[in-house]
Length: 340
Image (cartoon, rainbow, N blue to C red; front, side, top):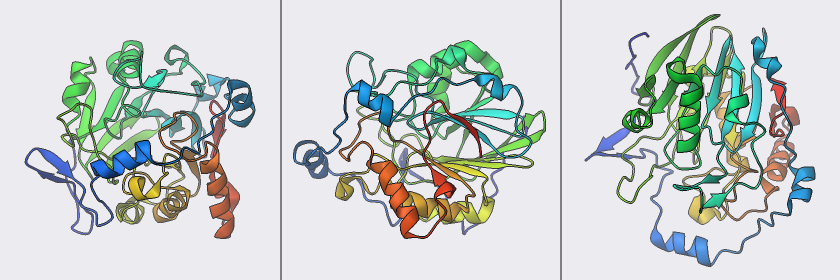
Protein backbone atom coordinates (compact mmCIF):
# COMPACT_ATOMS: atom_id res chain seq x y z
CA UNK A 1 0.00 0.00 0.00
CA UNK A 2 1.43 3.40 -0.93
CA UNK A 3 1.83 6.17 1.59
CA UNK A 4 -1.07 8.57 1.88
CA UNK A 5 -0.71 11.91 0.15
CA UNK A 6 -1.62 15.03 2.17
CA UNK A 7 -0.84 17.53 -0.60
CA UNK A 8 -3.53 20.12 -1.13
CA UNK A 9 -3.67 23.63 -2.52
CA UNK A 10 -5.18 26.63 -0.79
CA UNK A 11 -7.89 26.94 -3.45
CA UNK A 12 -9.23 23.52 -2.44
CA UNK A 13 -11.34 23.73 0.71
CA UNK A 14 -10.16 21.50 3.53
CA UNK A 15 -12.28 19.79 6.17
CA UNK A 16 -12.86 21.78 9.37
CA UNK A 17 -12.32 20.01 12.69
CA UNK A 18 -12.66 21.75 16.05
CA UNK A 19 -13.26 20.53 19.60
CA UNK A 20 -13.59 16.95 18.45
CA UNK A 21 -16.23 17.58 15.77
CA UNK A 22 -16.30 18.35 12.08
CA UNK A 23 -18.02 21.41 10.63
CA UNK A 24 -19.11 22.41 7.15
CA UNK A 25 -16.90 25.15 5.73
CA UNK A 26 -19.43 26.14 3.05
CA UNK A 27 -21.44 29.36 2.93
CA UNK A 28 -24.35 27.27 1.63
CA UNK A 29 -24.57 25.27 4.89
CA UNK A 30 -26.89 25.93 7.81
CA UNK A 31 -27.36 23.64 10.79
CA UNK A 32 -30.68 21.78 11.06
CA UNK A 33 -32.96 23.23 13.74
CA UNK A 34 -35.52 21.50 15.92
CA UNK A 35 -38.26 23.83 14.64
CA UNK A 36 -37.54 22.82 11.08
CA UNK A 37 -37.52 19.15 12.03
CA UNK A 38 -40.86 19.52 13.86
CA UNK A 39 -42.40 21.25 10.83
CA UNK A 40 -41.00 18.56 8.50
CA UNK A 41 -42.40 15.68 10.56
CA UNK A 42 -45.76 17.06 11.65
CA UNK A 43 -46.75 19.95 9.37
CA UNK A 44 -45.49 19.11 5.87
CA UNK A 45 -47.93 17.30 3.60
CA UNK A 46 -46.72 13.91 2.44
CA UNK A 47 -46.87 13.66 -1.36
CA UNK A 48 -44.91 10.40 -1.66
CA UNK A 49 -47.93 8.22 -2.55
CA UNK A 50 -45.93 5.01 -2.70
CA UNK A 51 -48.23 2.39 -4.27
CA UNK A 52 -48.58 -1.34 -3.71
CA UNK A 53 -45.92 -3.77 -4.88
CA UNK A 54 -47.67 -4.74 -8.13
CA UNK A 55 -47.59 -1.09 -9.28
CA UNK A 56 -44.01 -0.65 -8.13
CA UNK A 57 -43.03 -3.66 -10.23
CA UNK A 58 -44.12 -1.64 -13.25
CA UNK A 59 -42.86 1.82 -12.28
CA UNK A 60 -39.64 0.80 -10.47
CA UNK A 61 -38.80 -2.69 -11.70
CA UNK A 62 -35.93 -4.61 -10.14
CA UNK A 63 -34.01 -6.79 -12.58
CA UNK A 64 -32.13 -10.00 -11.81
CA UNK A 65 -28.51 -9.27 -12.77
CA UNK A 66 -26.22 -11.54 -14.75
CA UNK A 67 -22.92 -11.03 -12.97
CA UNK A 68 -20.92 -12.85 -15.64
CA UNK A 69 -20.57 -9.36 -17.14
CA UNK A 70 -18.16 -8.57 -14.29
CA UNK A 71 -15.83 -11.44 -15.21
CA UNK A 72 -13.71 -8.94 -17.15
CA UNK A 73 -13.55 -5.17 -16.94
CA UNK A 74 -14.69 -3.21 -20.03
CA UNK A 75 -11.86 -1.95 -22.22
CA UNK A 76 -13.75 1.28 -22.81
CA UNK A 77 -16.14 2.86 -20.33
CA UNK A 78 -17.31 2.17 -16.77
CA UNK A 79 -19.62 -0.73 -15.90
CA UNK A 80 -22.42 0.13 -13.47
CA UNK A 81 -25.26 -1.60 -11.65
CA UNK A 82 -27.58 0.22 -9.25
CA UNK A 83 -28.27 -1.83 -6.12
CA UNK A 84 -30.68 0.81 -4.81
CA UNK A 85 -30.47 4.05 -2.83
CA UNK A 86 -26.79 5.16 -2.91
CA UNK A 87 -25.42 1.66 -3.56
CA UNK A 88 -23.82 0.98 -6.93
CA UNK A 89 -21.52 -1.77 -8.18
CA UNK A 90 -18.97 -0.11 -10.45
CA UNK A 91 -16.16 -1.64 -12.50
CA UNK A 92 -13.35 0.26 -14.19
CA UNK A 93 -9.81 -0.53 -15.24
CA UNK A 94 -9.93 -4.04 -13.76
CA UNK A 95 -11.24 -3.04 -10.31
CA UNK A 96 -14.78 -3.51 -8.92
CA UNK A 97 -16.02 -0.95 -6.40
CA UNK A 98 -19.16 -0.97 -4.24
CA UNK A 99 -20.54 2.32 -2.93
CA UNK A 100 -22.40 2.77 0.40
CA UNK A 101 -23.72 -0.81 0.50
CA UNK A 102 -27.11 -1.35 2.11
CA UNK A 103 -28.77 -4.70 1.48
CA UNK A 104 -30.83 -4.74 4.68
CA UNK A 105 -34.58 -4.41 4.76
CA UNK A 106 -34.44 -1.30 6.96
CA UNK A 107 -32.04 1.63 7.35
CA UNK A 108 -32.19 1.67 11.12
CA UNK A 109 -30.19 0.75 14.23
CA UNK A 110 -32.37 -2.38 14.45
CA UNK A 111 -34.19 -4.44 11.84
CA UNK A 112 -37.52 -4.74 13.64
CA UNK A 113 -38.38 -1.04 13.44
CA UNK A 114 -37.38 1.94 11.34
CA UNK A 115 -37.52 3.08 7.73
CA UNK A 116 -38.25 0.08 5.52
CA UNK A 117 -37.21 -0.22 1.90
CA UNK A 118 -40.07 -0.38 -0.58
CA UNK A 119 -37.94 -1.82 -3.41
CA UNK A 120 -35.74 -4.85 -2.74
CA UNK A 121 -32.09 -5.11 -3.74
CA UNK A 122 -31.57 -7.01 -7.01
CA UNK A 123 -29.30 -9.57 -5.36
CA UNK A 124 -27.93 -10.79 -2.07
CA UNK A 125 -24.38 -10.13 -0.93
CA UNK A 126 -23.65 -13.83 -1.41
CA UNK A 127 -24.45 -13.45 -5.13
CA UNK A 128 -22.12 -10.52 -5.80
CA UNK A 129 -19.08 -10.99 -8.02
CA UNK A 130 -15.64 -10.34 -6.56
CA UNK A 131 -15.57 -6.86 -5.02
CA UNK A 132 -12.17 -5.24 -4.57
CA UNK A 133 -13.04 -2.02 -2.74
CA UNK A 134 -15.92 -0.40 -0.88
CA UNK A 135 -16.26 3.36 -0.43
CA UNK A 136 -18.33 4.78 2.43
CA UNK A 137 -19.51 8.40 2.30
CA UNK A 138 -20.66 8.87 5.92
CA UNK A 139 -22.17 7.07 8.87
CA UNK A 140 -25.93 7.63 8.53
CA UNK A 141 -27.88 4.37 8.67
CA UNK A 142 -29.05 4.54 5.04
CA UNK A 143 -25.39 4.69 3.90
CA UNK A 144 -23.50 2.69 6.51
CA UNK A 145 -25.42 -0.51 7.22
CA UNK A 146 -23.91 -2.74 9.90
CA UNK A 147 -25.43 -5.99 8.61
CA UNK A 148 -24.14 -5.35 5.10
CA UNK A 149 -20.67 -4.47 6.39
CA UNK A 150 -20.50 -7.69 8.41
CA UNK A 151 -21.77 -9.82 5.52
CA UNK A 152 -19.32 -8.28 3.03
CA UNK A 153 -16.45 -8.77 5.47
CA UNK A 154 -17.48 -12.38 6.01
CA UNK A 155 -17.65 -12.97 2.25
CA UNK A 156 -14.42 -11.26 1.15
CA UNK A 157 -12.33 -10.83 4.31
CA UNK A 158 -9.09 -8.86 4.19
CA UNK A 159 -8.97 -8.99 0.39
CA UNK A 160 -11.69 -6.31 0.47
CA UNK A 161 -10.36 -2.80 1.05
CA UNK A 162 -12.66 -0.28 2.74
CA UNK A 163 -12.27 3.43 2.07
CA UNK A 164 -13.85 5.60 4.76
CA UNK A 165 -13.80 9.27 5.79
CA UNK A 166 -11.81 10.38 8.81
CA UNK A 167 -13.12 9.15 12.16
CA UNK A 168 -14.80 5.98 10.89
CA UNK A 169 -11.91 3.49 10.93
CA UNK A 170 -12.39 2.54 14.58
CA UNK A 171 -16.07 1.65 13.97
CA UNK A 172 -15.06 -0.43 10.93
CA UNK A 173 -12.40 -2.28 12.93
CA UNK A 174 -14.89 -2.97 15.72
CA UNK A 175 -17.24 -4.40 13.09
CA UNK A 176 -14.55 -6.88 12.03
CA UNK A 177 -13.02 -5.10 9.02
CA UNK A 178 -9.22 -4.87 9.08
CA UNK A 179 -8.26 -3.63 5.60
CA UNK A 180 -9.52 -0.08 6.19
CA UNK A 181 -8.08 3.13 4.76
CA UNK A 182 -9.26 6.31 6.49
CA UNK A 183 -8.83 9.61 4.63
CA UNK A 184 -9.71 13.26 4.93
CA UNK A 185 -10.68 15.61 2.07
CA UNK A 186 -8.15 15.64 -0.81
CA UNK A 187 -6.16 12.81 0.71
CA UNK A 188 -5.27 10.02 -1.73
CA UNK A 189 -4.47 6.32 -1.56
CA UNK A 190 -3.31 3.94 -4.27
CA UNK A 191 -4.95 0.57 -4.92
CA UNK A 192 -2.81 -1.68 -7.12
CA UNK A 193 -5.16 -3.04 -9.77
CA UNK A 194 -4.47 -5.62 -12.49
CA UNK A 195 -4.52 -2.92 -15.18
CA UNK A 196 -2.56 -0.32 -13.26
CA UNK A 197 -2.86 1.76 -10.14
CA UNK A 198 -6.23 3.14 -9.09
CA UNK A 199 -6.17 6.32 -7.03
CA UNK A 200 -8.93 6.69 -4.43
CA UNK A 201 -9.42 10.29 -3.34
CA UNK A 202 -11.58 11.44 -0.44
CA UNK A 203 -13.28 14.54 -1.80
CA UNK A 204 -15.62 17.14 -0.23
CA UNK A 205 -19.37 17.39 -0.05
CA UNK A 206 -21.87 19.19 2.21
CA UNK A 207 -23.57 17.03 4.80
CA UNK A 208 -23.33 15.91 8.44
CA UNK A 209 -22.90 12.76 10.52
CA UNK A 210 -24.73 11.17 13.43
CA UNK A 211 -25.20 7.58 14.53
CA UNK A 212 -25.89 7.82 18.25
CA UNK A 213 -27.39 10.39 20.59
CA UNK A 214 -24.05 12.07 21.35
CA UNK A 215 -21.73 11.55 18.36
CA UNK A 216 -22.86 14.44 16.12
CA UNK A 217 -20.19 15.15 13.48
CA UNK A 218 -17.42 13.20 15.19
CA UNK A 219 -16.98 11.48 11.82
CA UNK A 220 -16.31 13.31 8.56
CA UNK A 221 -18.61 13.07 5.51
CA UNK A 222 -17.23 12.86 1.98
CA UNK A 223 -17.65 12.06 -1.66
CA UNK A 224 -15.16 9.83 -3.51
CA UNK A 225 -13.17 10.20 -6.72
CA UNK A 226 -11.83 6.96 -8.18
CA UNK A 227 -9.13 7.64 -10.76
CA UNK A 228 -7.91 4.79 -12.94
CA UNK A 229 -5.22 4.77 -15.60
CA UNK A 230 -7.83 5.23 -18.34
CA UNK A 231 -11.20 5.94 -16.64
CA UNK A 232 -12.53 8.13 -13.83
CA UNK A 233 -15.55 7.56 -11.56
CA UNK A 234 -17.14 9.90 -9.02
CA UNK A 235 -19.51 9.04 -6.18
CA UNK A 236 -21.22 12.04 -4.58
CA UNK A 237 -22.51 10.21 -1.50
CA UNK A 238 -25.13 12.34 0.25
CA UNK A 239 -24.91 16.09 -0.08
CA UNK A 240 -26.33 19.55 -0.37
CA UNK A 241 -24.98 21.81 -3.08
CA UNK A 242 -21.68 23.57 -2.35
CA UNK A 243 -18.62 25.08 -3.99
CA UNK A 244 -16.70 21.85 -3.50
CA UNK A 245 -17.99 20.29 -6.70
CA UNK A 246 -16.39 22.97 -8.87
CA UNK A 247 -13.13 22.32 -7.02
CA UNK A 248 -13.38 18.58 -7.64
CA UNK A 249 -14.14 19.14 -11.32
CA UNK A 250 -11.18 21.48 -11.63
CA UNK A 251 -8.78 19.10 -9.93
CA UNK A 252 -9.93 15.69 -11.16
CA UNK A 253 -12.47 16.13 -13.94
CA UNK A 254 -13.67 15.21 -16.43
CA UNK A 255 -15.22 12.00 -15.09
CA UNK A 256 -16.41 9.17 -17.32
CA UNK A 257 -19.24 8.37 -14.87
CA UNK A 258 -20.66 10.02 -11.77
CA UNK A 259 -23.38 8.77 -9.44
CA UNK A 260 -25.22 11.77 -7.99
CA UNK A 261 -28.18 11.93 -5.55
CA UNK A 262 -31.46 13.22 -6.98
CA UNK A 263 -33.99 12.31 -4.25
CA UNK A 264 -34.97 12.94 -0.61
CA UNK A 265 -35.20 16.72 -1.02
CA UNK A 266 -38.70 17.94 -0.05
CA UNK A 267 -39.45 20.23 1.74
CA UNK A 268 -36.64 22.45 0.50
CA UNK A 269 -36.64 24.96 3.36
CA UNK A 270 -35.56 22.17 5.71
CA UNK A 271 -33.60 19.81 3.46
CA UNK A 272 -31.72 22.03 0.99
CA UNK A 273 -28.49 22.29 3.05
CA UNK A 274 -28.13 18.51 3.26
CA UNK A 275 -29.83 17.08 0.12
CA UNK A 276 -29.71 18.37 -3.45
CA UNK A 277 -32.79 18.41 -5.66
CA UNK A 278 -32.66 17.29 -9.33
CA UNK A 279 -31.78 20.79 -10.59
CA UNK A 280 -28.82 21.00 -8.22
CA UNK A 281 -27.83 17.46 -9.18
CA UNK A 282 -27.49 18.69 -12.76
CA UNK A 283 -25.36 21.57 -11.47
CA UNK A 284 -23.07 19.01 -9.80
CA UNK A 285 -22.92 16.99 -13.03
CA UNK A 286 -21.77 20.10 -14.87
CA UNK A 287 -19.36 21.21 -12.13
CA UNK A 288 -17.67 17.81 -12.21
CA UNK A 289 -17.45 17.86 -16.02
CA UNK A 290 -19.03 14.43 -15.93
CA UNK A 291 -19.53 12.78 -19.32
CA UNK A 292 -22.34 10.57 -18.00
CA UNK A 293 -24.17 10.59 -14.67
CA UNK A 294 -26.62 8.25 -12.97
CA UNK A 295 -29.20 9.47 -10.45
CA UNK A 296 -29.07 7.70 -7.08
CA UNK A 297 -30.53 8.20 -3.57
CA UNK A 298 -34.14 7.73 -4.63
CA UNK A 299 -36.65 4.98 -5.30
CA UNK A 300 -35.68 2.76 -2.37
CA UNK A 301 -36.46 4.25 1.06
CA UNK A 302 -39.15 6.78 1.92
CA UNK A 303 -37.04 9.40 3.68
CA UNK A 304 -38.84 12.61 2.70
CA UNK A 305 -42.15 13.79 1.26
CA UNK A 306 -41.86 14.34 -2.49
CA UNK A 307 -43.87 12.10 -4.87
CA UNK A 308 -41.91 8.87 -5.17
CA UNK A 309 -41.32 9.23 -8.94
CA UNK A 310 -40.73 12.99 -8.87
CA UNK A 311 -36.90 12.79 -8.74
CA UNK A 312 -36.85 10.96 -12.09
CA UNK A 313 -39.45 13.30 -13.61
CA UNK A 314 -37.78 16.49 -12.37
CA UNK A 315 -34.38 15.33 -13.63
CA UNK A 316 -35.74 14.81 -17.14
CA UNK A 317 -37.50 18.19 -17.01
CA UNK A 318 -34.31 19.95 -15.90
CA UNK A 319 -32.22 18.45 -18.69
CA UNK A 320 -34.85 19.48 -21.23
CA UNK A 321 -35.06 23.00 -19.79
CA UNK A 322 -31.30 23.45 -20.19
CA UNK A 323 -31.19 21.93 -23.66
CA UNK A 324 -28.91 19.14 -22.44
CA UNK A 325 -28.64 15.67 -23.95
CA UNK A 326 -31.13 13.49 -21.99
CA UNK A 327 -28.65 10.61 -22.12
CA UNK A 328 -26.01 12.64 -20.28
CA UNK A 329 -27.73 12.19 -16.90
CA UNK A 330 -30.05 9.21 -16.51
CA UNK A 331 -31.87 7.02 -14.02
CA UNK A 332 -31.57 3.24 -14.26
CA UNK A 333 -33.41 0.16 -13.08
CA UNK A 334 -32.04 -1.64 -10.06
CA UNK A 335 -30.09 -4.67 -11.25
CA UNK A 336 -29.60 -3.35 -14.80
CA UNK A 337 -25.94 -3.68 -15.78
CA UNK A 338 -24.72 -1.07 -18.26
CA UNK A 339 -21.42 0.23 -19.56
CA UNK A 340 -21.24 4.04 -19.70
